[in-house]
Image (cartoon, rainbow, N blue to C red; front, side, top):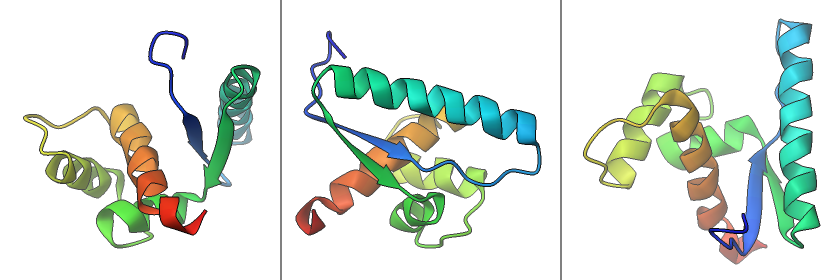
Length: 102
C-alpha cells in the first residue's frame, strides 16, 4: 500500500464455506487486509461474492472460470489471470461499477 498509494480498499465478504477451517483462515486473512488498509487511512468497502460475480459476469452464481474469463475480457488482458488475481480484480471492477452509488 505504501508503494502503490491506493485511495480506497475493497474486499469481498467472507462466504459460508463447507470447511470451517478454510473459512476461519479466509476470515483471518481478510481481517488482516482490512486492518492494514485502515491503518493506512483508507476507507474499506465490502461487497458480497454474489454482487462481485454479478458485476463481472452478469450472473451472481458464476463459476471461478467464468469470472476469470470475464476479467480477462473486460480488462483486455493478454492472458488469463490466476484464480486469486481474477478474484481481486473482480472486486476492483465491482467497486468501480458502484462508485456512483456510494
